Image (cartoon, rainbow, N blue to C red; front, side, top):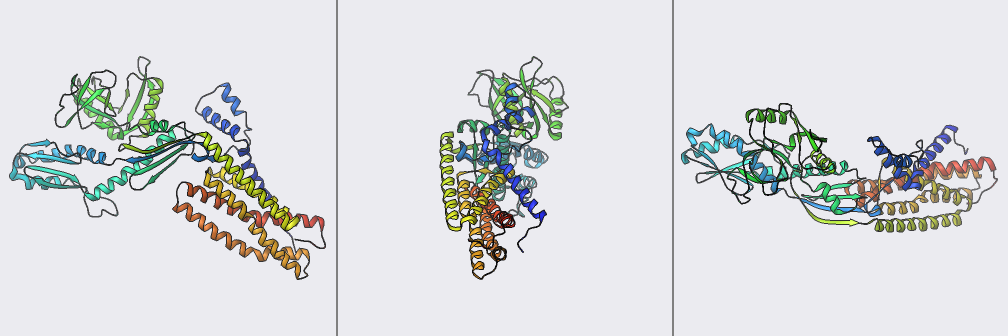
Amino acid sequence: MLQIEGWKRLTIWFFVAVGLLLAVPNGFYTRVEQHNDAVAEMELGFDSPELQAQVAQWPTWMPSSLVNLGLDLRGGAHLLAEVETDAVYAQRMEGLWPEVRDALRQERATVGAIRLQDGAPDELRVAIGEPAGMARALEVVRAIARPIVTLTGVGATDIEVRAEGNQLVVTLSEEERIATDERTLQQSLEIIRRRVDEAGTREPTIQRQGSDRILIQVPGIGSAQELKDIIGTTAQLSFQPVVRVTSDSNEVPGIGNELAQSLDEEGLYYILERNAVVTGEELVDAQPEFDQNGAPAVGFRFNPAGARKFGQYTAENVGALFAIVLDDEVISAPRINEAIPGGSGIITGNFSLEESTSLAVLLRAGALPAPLEFLEERTIGPELGQDSIDAGRIACIVAFAAVLVFMGLSYGFFGLIANIALIVNVALIFGLLSLIGATLTLPGIAGIVLTIGMAVDANVLVFERIREELKTAKGPARAIELGYEKALSAIIDANITTFITAVILFVMGSGPVRGFAITLGLGIITSVFTAIFVTRLIIVMWFERRRPKQIEV
């Protein structure tokens, strides 16, 4: 007979109640958003009457998760950046020189004097004094090569060495270039993500496009320039020995050296050794602090390897100048008064409190491994986002109203029950989106509109099946029961195939396609739940109360 056990009824109503409760905050979006922002700030230690008033705008016992609005709905900034991997090749060659120099020095009796020569940025040229020792020099430098640990570079090494006259020429192998490009892009993705997260933005989209490009979309940010300021700064920190100080900006620094301008003193330049003692890659922490004079500064701390090199160099060079270089500018060049074995220190300069905080964020997030060239930038104003929301809202209302009218006219009282389930279905979609923290985009709204149309399919199948069973002179209770039983397989089959399509769209797609796939997939789950369980439970409860002798569908 037509009946549902008590525990099943409680379970169904429990899921409906939880879904509706999770969806409620989205009806008070601005108020709940201000509440959440105020709570986040108070957790960081800030407190004020304004923050407390914003926290009080929403009950603490109510859910406060919201559906995040995407770039096309909220407005924000869009950037397409290209990673300039050629700069990484040059850095690799510069970093290889000390190792090549030390290896050849051990063979000085055979190869003679060694001198670094000018060459292309992506190659290292070393002249040897004894051309007869070239074969031995090639053998020594090739022994430095390391195997490449990738699936595509099995058996290959990272460098190639050849002779040109009395010069050794060292370049990266093709396999190493491919592996370096991949590492550089992945590292850039991670650092950009960390920098954007440090800035406290909501639900950014940061993803790879092609072999060397990165797409960055951040909703709610003021302009594309503001986003570029967050991620565009390379923030490459290094500690380099000072060769001498000069006021001549045209002075030739010499091979193995470089010229860097002072950040604080105009007209002051430093000749630095190009190879840094310690770099920002060995930095593990950076925090805004105050120096002994109460001025804003940035405290830093190295990892064990960096601390060991930092301590050893300062112990061996007491009395020498030591430059702290940020993005090719000397921000400070203190004299080493004593060894610093702890691996920590402080960067001082003419910083404001905001500048010291920003610098600490950039250093903590890490240095970008390569410069970025911004190929495309757009600022989407909130007005355009509001237009998209209004258009999507109108589309949902029109679709919703049309489906409600159609079901009411086609199936009468049973159509009204389907309409109730449809309203519950849409609320459950927003509840699930809030629960998982999904981002709603304009294509996502299209997925919801499509779900509204698809949600009644299962009810149509059930109601048409009940009509057929009523024609066989079965009682109304038996007709309803058989209608749900015989329509179940068709409902499951149709929705599984659509759900598989949504999964494929999510896995293979990106950006807007994923937004559509998420709402479509969640809509299928809630549609099956409301059609099979919610409408059936409502009909059973109505039937138990009225006990009709006959029904019309």
